[in-house]
Image (cartoon, rainbow, N blue to C red; front, side, top):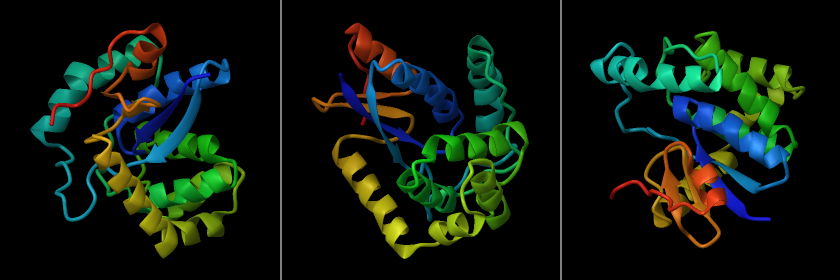
Length: 196
């Protein structure tokens, strides 16, 4: 069975949509996936303006169309938070064997309910929805060890040519940035890395 590393961010609409496709392929037993959190805009990188032209244009021209094609509910978020805390909590949820449920809860809160998933309250609520300990999730979000692991994952990703999410990296080192990477890999089509 082929395996891939899949880099995602819980505040990226394309990661949200691509995750559902990869999970379905994973559930069929066609692929082994190593889920790796990758923060798109870690401090001090500037965040996108919530109602800026980039977001409004991207969502109206691309995001809503792709979500509609896939039957995925999604709404332009009211917030553009840093994802350091929820991604550190994702590492913890993965250790607990509940990453998928925890990610789903974060995605739903952010993209369907319009909540700021970088707050302690939303991290705790996502944990409860995923059957995890709420206090444990919040502690994990602030864990220096998990924060260091996030940075290490980012360093490894960038060394492998990852420059954004969603990105799939195959066993042989080939990468695909954007949606459709796993489908291309499984069908033997060339992968399309993000330009340097």
